[in-house]
Length: 172
Image (cartoon, rainbow, N blue to C red; front, side, top):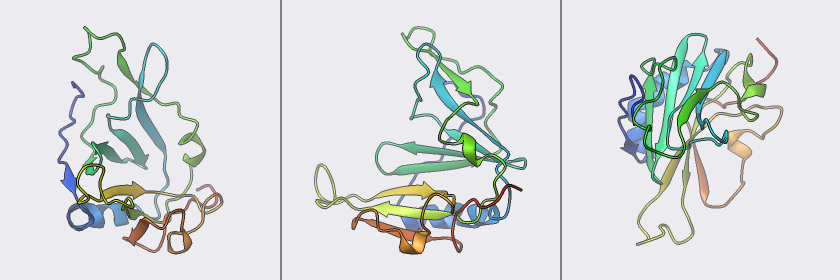
């Protein structure tokens, strides 16, 4: 896919993800989310989940991309969201950058309070052979979600905290 500046380094497992990205993610705590960009298909507006989501924290852009079930990449200030996405001219649906998302919009102007890495362990451990765990990055707003330390949405989710918590209190 032709996303200008996007060169993901995909990592697997909480230890590798924390080692590579933990300090930079923790440094975002206290900053306000000033904007975001996602990729949607131009024809129907559907979110294209295989592309990075770019979260802007007062000029520091975190480019988050999950791939397959257990791979995560976070880039920093490299993706050019003003350039058209190339390489899709022969497909039925064409991806394009969008600054509209009903899930992310309410968080613009809010201070980031916590970053957490979550590991999901399905009851059978893996769809194929019972060996895999899936990692995910979580950023949350305190007014709408409980804190990491008390979240028990599923017994198979094990929170791993980088800082004290991700929540979004009053506007900056």
